[in-house]
Length: 91
Length: 154
Image 1 (spheres, rainbow over the protein chains, first blue to last red):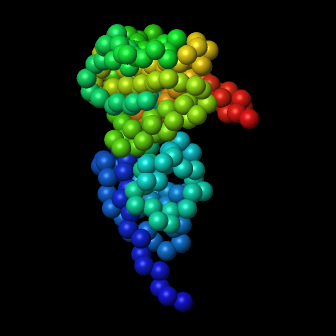
Image 2 (image 1 turned 30 degrees about the vertical axis):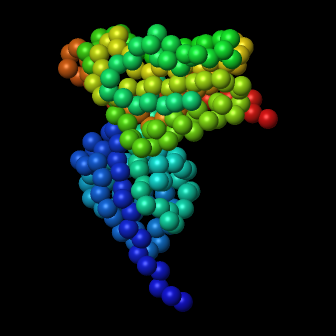
Image 3 (image 1 turned 60 degrees about the vertical axis):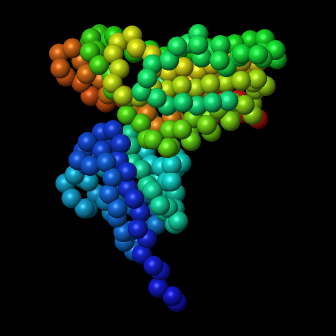
C-alpha cells in the first residue's frame, strides 16, 4: 500500500476565534487519523493553551472548507483552506 | 445581479437609479437598509466594527443572490454590505430587488436578508460608551427566520 503524502492546510481564524488564537492564520500539516473537521478540532485542542481557549466550546465554532460552510463531519481530503469562526452576525 | 463588499457608505437613491436605468421590465422595486443601532439591551454604543472573510463573503453573497433569482422572477438585484468601523446611524447593508410585480420583490428581499444574516461571513463587535464591549452573539430568531424558507421549499 503506497504511503499517503501528508496534507498541508492553511488555517484561518476570524472574530473571537482569531482573538483567542492571537493570530489570523497559519499552515499546519494534518497528522494521521485526522480526516474530518471535528477530528481536526479535537487535535488542535491538544496543541497549546491558545487552541484550548479558542476551541473550548467546539459546538459554537463554525467551519468552512475552501470558503464554503461545512458541518463538523465534513471530510478534509483535498482541502486547502480551513476557516474557523463564531456563528455569523452580519446584516 | 450584483454584490459589493465595501468600506465606503452607499447612497440608496443613486444605487436604485443605476440598477433600474433604462429598464422597462420592472414594475416593483423593494429596498431594505440595515443601520447601526445606538444601543444594545439599553447600553449606548459608540462604535460597531464589522469583520468579514474576504473572498468567502463575496462568494456566499453571490450564492444567496443566485438562490433568490432561481426562486423568484427578479429583473434585477443588488446587495451591498459594509465592513470596518461604523457608528450609530451608519448604513450597514443594502438589499434591492426589482421585478415585474411586487410580491416577488418583497419576498426575495426578505429571503436575501434572512439568508445573509445566517450565511454571509460577517461578525459584529460593539464598543459601548463606557468602553466595554465585545462580539455580538448570533440570534436564534435569525435561524428561525431561515427555517421558514427551508420548510417552504418543495
